[in-house]
Amino acid sequence: MKTARLLDGSRVPVLGQGTWTMGEKNSAHASEVAALRLGIDLGMTLIDTAEMYGDGAAEKVVGDAINGQRDRVFIVTKAYPHNASRTELPKACERSLRRLR
Image (tube, rainbow, N blue to C red; front, side, top):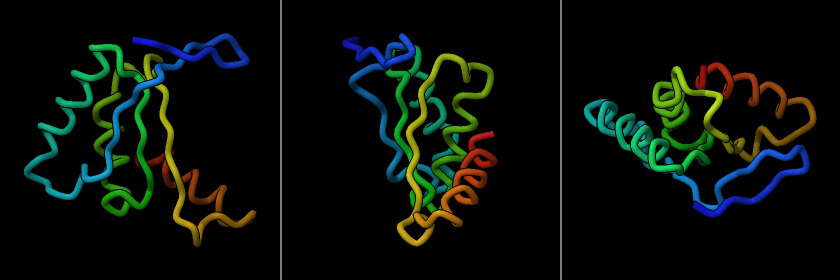
């Protein structure tokens, strides 16, 4: 897997896993967690998610998938545009962190 080097020396995969439709169906939760874990095992340790994906449910799926291996992954998440203000963005980040556990 090709990687990019960050300023702190960390190496991040240039290819990641997306979670756009994850968390929308409870019946798919186990298979979504399994898919993310398989990707991590295959070296796809960059996971892209957002609070708007499944209204936060995708972040919960990611949280379950990375449980026990948080030090192996890089998470990219995004906030709703209405949460992008100086006062709301920190709150949105805290909510995302809670969902990602």
